[in-house]
Length: 93
Image (cartoon, rainbow, N blue to C red):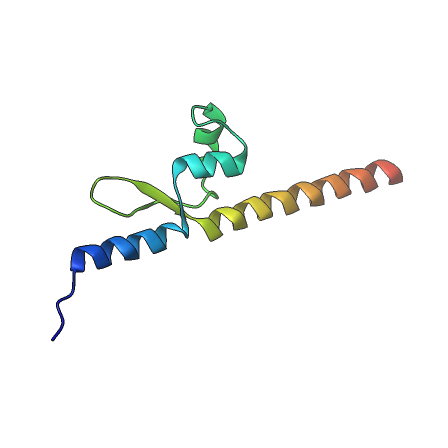
């Protein structure tokens, strides 16, 4: 039977998983805002913005990268759709 260093294994697992998670600072960068921007707080508190996950008892929150990217893409598509609708509404009117 081999001895397993569970602490090291756990650290490696967390490090690997962190590649798929975003810190608050990462989310700010992806949204194009500074950390202390009030806009970031408003965005992250919206009902449609992905909820953060608490990974440890220390209270560090992380967002799933795929969820944040999906939210950004959804926002981009909605803006594009609205811009096209406004363009064609003005052309017809």
